[in-house]
Length: 205
Image 1 (cartoon, helix red, strand yellow):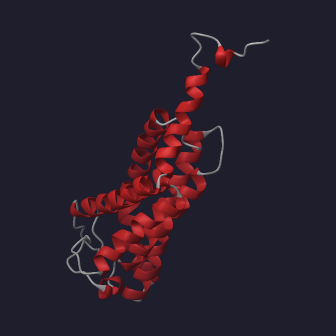
Image 2 (tube, helix red, strand yellow; image 1 turned 90 degrees about the horizontal axis):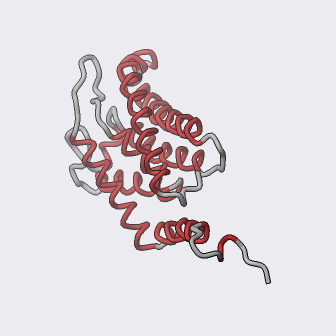
């Protein structure tokens, strides 16, 4: 009878093999996943409270992009998008969760309506990119978060162009003032996610 390394006393490979499964089981539990979806929706709400009005633009600077990127990275494409959809629905239901004053369906017709739609799409994009297996995790993370931030800006720019009636003015007001801030958020999100991957070896990314 032969013994494998996993069965030998003092070997930890068998234990390590079971740790990822435990983490996966936790994330796959419906209740745990639902709580995380709600938590990231509330995190996006909290990030909206950190709002900095900027000159020459109706769009404030917030930390919401960071919350959106992390939601997609940690929860995956579907649950990440669900967390942001939940956030938007809270505002549409009348809760004061948005960065600017106001709530309800009419809020989407304002200058930041496109960005809110972009939150949902961006979380899905980030989660989808990171769900693909690969060895260069750091580079894939940078790509995923960069695409997520760009998705938010594209969605916001598209609707802001309609609101302002001028794509060039929308570009100047809704994208250019936030480029450096978004790059910084991508860097921060990459660092946080790298730490999360190290802590949670079950991450498929």
